[in-house]
Structure formats: C-alpha cells, structure tokens
Image 1 (tube, helix red, strand yellow):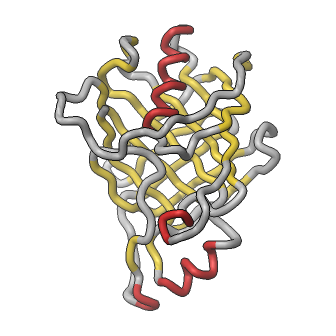
Image 2: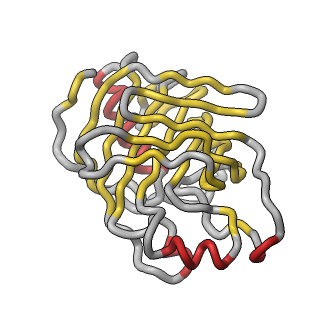
Length: 218
C-alpha cells in the first residue's frame, strides 16, 4: 500500500438535490455506520449520544467524469470518525466534526486520484471534512444478487440488500445516507470495519440495520 502525500482538505457544502442537467457521473454507493439507521425510537435515543460516530463510505464509478477527468470503473472508500453521532444533526443535535482516511483505487492515475478525492468531498454532504490520510491500493468490489461487498486493506464494507425488522418500538428509518445519492435503500450491515491507525480509533460493527446501498449520479 502506498501513502500519498497531501495537505488536509476541507469539504464545501455539496448539493443534496440532483441537477436538472444530465448526469456526467454514475455508479454504485454503499455505506455503513456504527449505529442503526432503521429502528425504533427507543433504540435511536439510546444510541444517539454514545454510538454512530464512525462509518465507512464507498463509491464504485460505473461511467463518467468528475472535474473533466474520466473515472470509469474506478472505486474509492472513506473511513470517517466523528466527535459525535454522524447523523444526530438530523434529529436536532450538533453536526459532527470528522476526520477521514481515504483509499483510492490503485489503477487510478495521479489526475484520477485527485478527481476521486474531490468527488468524495463533493458527494459526502459535509460528512468528509478533515482528510488526514490518503492511500492508494487495490479495491475489490463484488456485487451479488443479495449482497454487495467492497474492501481494501484496512477498509471493509459489506451490505445485505434485505432489511429484516419488526414493528416493535415503532421501527422506521431515522437517518438519510451520509452522501448524495440518486436512489438508496436501507440494508443490513454484514461488515463495517476500519483497522487503520490514522483516525485514532478502529472499529468492526457487523450485523446491524445500519447500512444504505444504491446508486449515485452527479
């Protein structure tokens, strides 16, 4: 794995609605965080102040370009650690201050790496702010009928497309995805892990209703 030198970058506010112009970038998006996104109020209240501070986000570009650079077939992943629950601002809390580690597809050229990082910043709706590390490594992406998996070294994310739930405690979806998406559904996290050293924290938080999967366009 190769460490890329870069200064910290800060996210500017990304649009949360789709442009009326035809999309120049399309692909698959996955995320999982360390708190439920689909649950009852009793669960959400218990997690809001204590969990949900970490997440792994991933993009697989099917086709298109960003900032004039073609990104067809390339992937990028981001591990995010915040000082509070990453979604609590949606229910009246303060927005989390975050640190982010990014891994960029090893096949990307220098220009494509720069464009992929800029894409992550633009699409992550202020979730990605202080980027403390960027690495370049092979990223494995496997999309099956029921599961989607993407992994690279310290970054691991797998989502089951079905969401089992009961009506106990008034289950419903409380949070939106952490990035701009064209279409997304809540799923079950099979794997959500970051084992790197750059964020000051590591996690592995599987088997929760804490994921979203779907498509993005920009």
